[in-house]
Amino acid sequence: MSQTVPLDSSRRRLLLQGSAALIAVPSLLRHALAADVQRFALGIASGQPRADGIVLWTRVTGADLPERTTVRWEIARDEAFQQIAARGEETAEAAWAHSVHAEPAGLEPGRWYWYRFEALGQRSAVGRTRTAPRPDDAATLNFAITSCQRFDVGHYAAWRHIVAEDLDLVMFLGDYIYESPNAKDAVRQVEGGRIDTLAGYRTRYATHKGDTALQAAHAAVPWLLVWDDHEVENDYAGLQGQRLQPDFRRQRADAYQAYWEHMPFPKSARPRGADMRITGRLDWGRLARIHLLDDRQYRDPQVCPQPGRGGSNTVTLKDCPALLDPKRTLLGAEQERWLAEGWDGSRPWNLVAQQTLMARYNWSDPADPSTGGGTHWTDGWDGYAPARNRLLGVVAERKLAGVVVLGGDVHSHYVADLKADFDVANAPVIATEFCGTSISSLGLPQARLDAARGFNPHVHYGRSDQRGYMRFTLGAKQLQAILRVVDQPRDPMSGISTAARFMVEAGKAGAVAA
Ligand code: FE
Ligand code: CA
Image (cartoon, rainbow, N blue to C red; front, side):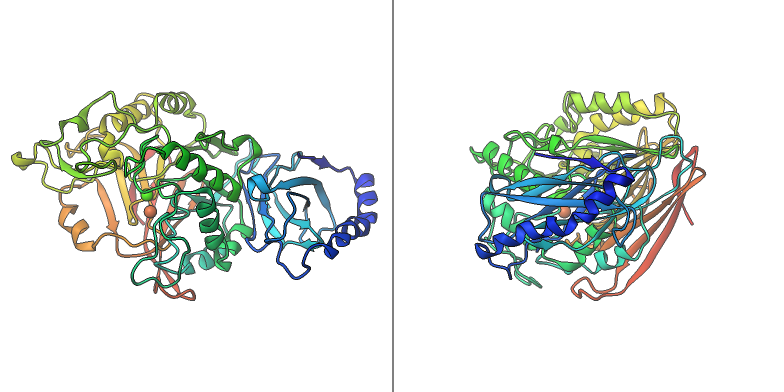
């Protein structure tokens, strides 16, 4: 149930006069419910900004909650809530973990707002969010890309620093949780070992969202989110689990439900069984079109897995010629078409927010005849090279000069040129890629990346040994990228520094050091 009320000023005054009564009603319930239980222990969030609306999220907490409880929300033009822009109420239901997905409409484009919730006599913290600029606005965009925040192996100092970055948007590109049990040298604990049930996923999200630095990052700025594999299970592909378990459809349904319950997605995205649409698009003024992709739900299984398993492998082209099968897809035929038809030639930039490294990363010398063209990891775009060529082929054919692919997943900062043919040194650069390192998840040994750097001259930067995020300033003329890395990933109060800077000029694909 939802109720959105854009308010004119007379009606606003009326409701403000009545606000004491609004608070008084839930206080009656305190007799039945413990007054000292925190009702917003997992924080608040906003996401999916539009020019006229936003999604506000929270989840009411406490072991003593009724089946259904009413949650009020309000969004204001000022931090003191003197100028209310809209307010409404939602029913939080046990069947959906008492999550709240409020969707205020009728907001003004391109401005900041403040929001809060109220339930069972308690008020949430105040969150800050903003709407997208109107479509004809000559806007700029400050944003960060983030991914991979495994809880047990590191702390979230990166999120504390993101709050200070003065951003319009945070993009989270997958692996919000990990389904795995605690690592041997865990810095903090998750419960429940390896999770694969609705209860397990809910507890895992609650553990992550208990972190105050993560809560602060959600409360500071709206987020755009896509998932990767670990929100369900490592290396899953479509309806195939890594362990080839027969009940994977049930597991995926449970995982998608818990994901929706904990993220600022609209009610229309609520999963039906094992299906949930996260694919979407957002225009940021005249500046950019942002495409959000799902490379997990619709993909073909990885080829040449290890015997008796699903999931990824690292194989030579000689041993796995199926890598070049043009019938295979990473996005699914429908999403591929949706993207091909949705590129925007009228704005200087098309940003593609997706999960993983798109650039080819050959792990051995492609000229070595014993490999038949090199060694490839089958879970990323290298496992679906013909699908990558199709996508980049459309970009080349449409002469879209400002395509920037953003990714995560591989726990490394990569900056790369995307080319029609990665084996030809002077093949044209079609698009630019920034793949950001993990917030906390551990990366490959740096020596492994370095040993293969010479086989991948289109990759300008590759560091697997640092945690952090990438911060961008996008303007009509250029994109500036700052690669940020934390000093001590196991210290929640760690400092941060800039590891490198890159720049992309509008109309000229490819990154240059800045
Ligand atoms: Fe990850
Ligand atoms: Ca991943």
